[in-house]
Image 1 (cartoon, rainbow, N blue to C red):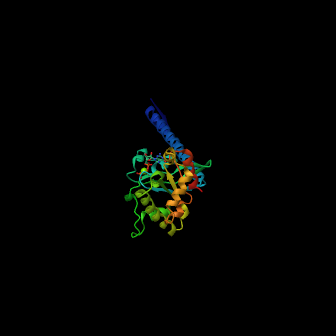
Image 2 (cartoon, helix red, strand yellow):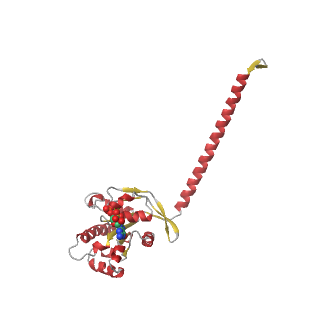
Image 3 (cartoon, helix red, strand yellow):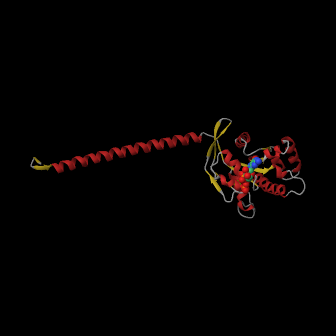
Length: 245
Ligand SMILES: Nc1nc2c(ncn2[C@@H]2O[C@H](COP(=O)(O)OP(=O)(O)OP(=O)(O)O)[C@@H](O)[C@H]2O)c(=O)[nH]1
Ligand SMILES: [Mg+2]
């Protein structure tokens, strides 16, 4: 069928094509407007989230200590997303994204960071290089948590693990003094539950440890030493509070 208007012949096929073409244009336009609306909403939500998070207190931390001290266990318990297989010994640097925690009922943020193994090779302490890993870490992080296994530390006699801890703490103390950040180093003696289960007494062990480190360079770091179990919710809460204190 065809219709002639002002000398132009319009066939049904032409009319249909014009109709569908126009419809498609309108649909495309609507889709584009909808996409723009969704993008605006997404941006607004992102900005709102960033503004909200900017008002939440945040800290960057680094957890140090010998192999088996409980670094990975503590980070996992605090809420860092790490492969939990790494509590069998962290073999490479594992990065974690920033995560939210509660401190005294209020929101707080632990910034992006990394979990390292306690093996010597993971961080350099060599002062000859321009800046050792340890210097970089102490300088750039807000808080350093240093963990050691209380049961190993207090063993009497020649104690290689205690010596190693004290050697590392000497370095850390030195670097922290150089950049005026002694207060950012927090010490925690871990495996407190095994210690208690074997009949130990917390106050007594803290005094014993302080006696053992008397006259060592890092002695001042032991002033606020706490004994914790990295799997205990209240103990981990204590660590979180110390990060924001
Ligand atoms: N009883 C007890 N066990 C703990 C505690 N903290 C860690 N552990 C255990 O000790 C072992 C070593 O813990 P990790 O968290 O892997 O120690 P790490 O410091 O990350 O060790 P590396 O990655 O090798 O340097 C694991 O079997 C943990 O379950 C604690 O406070 N109490
Ligand atoms: Mg580990």
